[in-house]
Image (cartoon, rainbow, N blue to C red; front, side, top):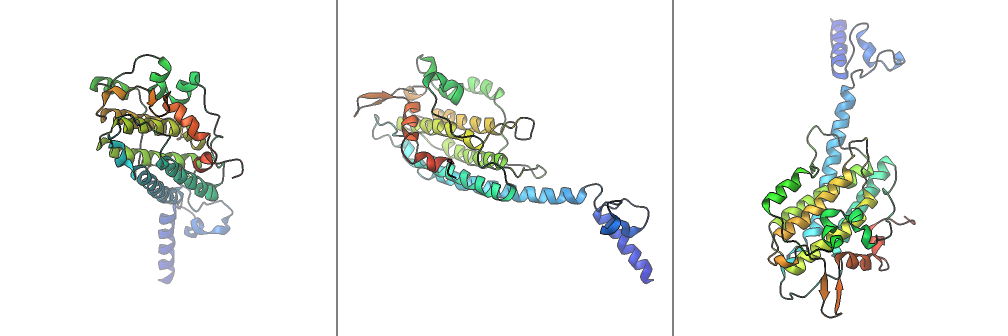
Length: 305
């Protein structure tokens, strides 16, 4: 009777650990069989552990993304301040640096566990004016490079057409999706969660001319720095990792334009500084900002890291 109970227990172990059946019931759980009978021949146990680790990693990405979104939304109310209609931004907000600090920390956590490169590519020199479209995209730099008159906010039909040609972005992974333990996957996920959360804040706000211009400057700065952390890794599940983040940044500017009560500033990249009696573009403001000493040490990794 005891022997029958023992054989039944081994049969149950075969079922749990994916025993192939046949032969000695204990063969599937015997580590001394030298690989002739695998412990998990169908990979069920490994798949369950992988899915569990993926869910834990997805929770980490969501937590870090919401932490970064909180930084972006912290001083968002100031973007509706219309007391000075001639004010222009002095550079990207500190909230953008706080966002990138969270991404840097996530990259460090990831490589400490899984190894790999700390960043995708070094931060390049700021592009020249003729390179703006290549560096920042047509949606963000098209008006500046064309030299034409500023365009007003996009119509509903135009927005529908644009959405047809924009890569759809999945912000939160599904219950059966695998989140890769790579720097590229984690950094891209944190940025997508943060920008998606901030987009909801933009949709529920109104913007002054200064506020809209500030969003544009912030977007140019983020487009410039994001390729330092994320790249499109073709042939892998992260083939559109960077492109999806770019689309989210462009969407922020588009939505802010729809919520701006001064239509004349939409698409106008010539910002007149009354005090200096000079005209600046958002690209010039970002370039001056990144060339300040110590700024890029907060925003990106350096050769000393």
